[in-house]
Length: 287
Image (cartoon, rainbow, N blue to C red; front, top):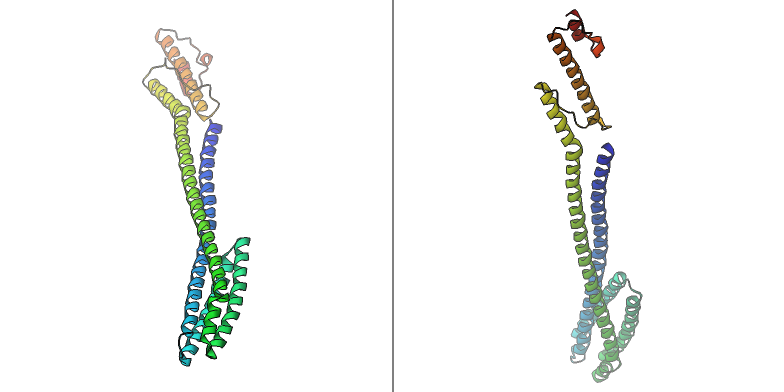
């Protein structure tokens, strides 16, 4: 019986451990996915800022070519250089967040294109300061426009890849959550069944036999010595208890038989012959 109980408790503990392990593994995976999503969204945000600054700078250069106000031109140039610093920061953030080889290669290509674009822009600045607005606009609409389009195409490609990666990560997170929920539900149901089986087992191997012994003891107390003590063949504590009651029943039967013989007038009964000892045997001997 003890072995069965221990085995039952071990099964329930194993099921509980499986639920905890499954939950812990899924949580770690979800944390990893969350970190990847954070990095991906950080990269996407950096690309959005980069494109916004690039568009702003291009528009600002064109604005410089249509004004003859040198103070305004100087102010716009400083604004462009300030935005260039933000673009460099956005590229650095995107590079830190990008974990794919292809993405990093594209970002490095963008850095090279932006550096070349800035060199062309310095030529535009020189022409603008010299008053050669038409030549500056020609450069802006020619080689600079081509570089700008390449930078934009790379940013769009990275943006698309980042969104696809984010969608994939979200789908994986949902799949992990659903799988975890299914595992927890299944293991919980199995644990419930195991608990019910344990309760049934306890009732069958402990409660049932104890009730049988209790009922037999009650009948003995009421004078019914024809009762049969159950569970005497068990090798556990319940079997020992049942065996003790069986010995008590045997003693009561012998004592009852002895008393009946005395009542019938047989005064030569040997109490020791019946196996009795103690005060009861002494009293019977004196009779």
